[in-house]
Image (cartoon, rainbow, N blue to C red; front, top):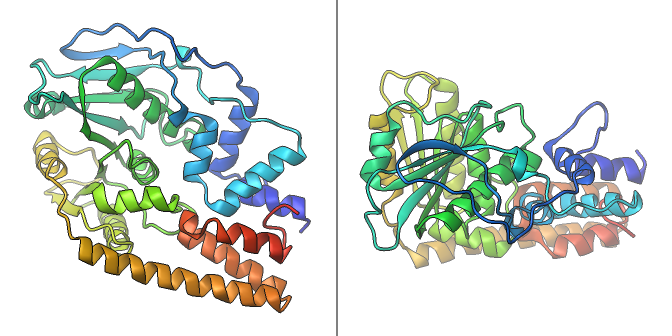
Length: 371
């Protein structure tokens, strides 16, 4: 395969009939150039009840460049940049035109229970309709939590060019319009939306302090869930709280929960809770299950610096050993094995391997980085 085709494959363009979400972001961003003014006025809302809104505020956190840098692995990001340079394309600032998007917002009827403001749950749905699940309003009132969910963000929607920026734009606009406690901002979702929520929580731990994962999860350290940069991942390890909840008869997703929660602990993420909803198959959690989940989500994350330091040292030692192995293969001009190992490192360690993996990829001259 030619170098250009390899780069396209890593970027996610069509290769051998396969398209991955990374291309959806690039394709949408290249054709959509309109972006709202950063100083646009907020949508006017009335406290109490659920209502549809159109947001107006853009922030750099859901720009195309920021999403790419946070959600792609180092080699995938390098391939994206290489492809754009070779094709003389430029990313537009945003993949969304917020004037054409709609969201459902629920605001508790009572004032915020904390002087710091409401809690916030951004919810990624599996369907295109923006819906507040039946019975959730009273629980949101109980916890003083605003709920926001986008429309046209279902499982058939592109992840990086729509589902991720829609969730991030919802958070940015709610925080601008309401008094929100910055320590109680969470991302959640159901089914495929839960998997997207997990990915957002992993890549934006500076915004979201935890995730509510209802019947959908993935293990870390692979192309579906690449690790972000070291600073972001260390923040995720130490400060993010994850709550998994799935129906006891939803056996497929119970298995996914087990694999994901186990991988979290392997990657030094200890603030993890799992729960099973009795007599439930694959359906959004009941109000009672939501209350149990929010009780867990809102608990302060336990702190064990010594355990975390030991766990991080183990991961770093494993990573450094693999990078040294790749360096040795490159020095011996064994490009095929070196290329395979670099891809394995990129997929497993993601941003933890940067910047060294990029230097090795260029030295390898095996189609993983520009000249």
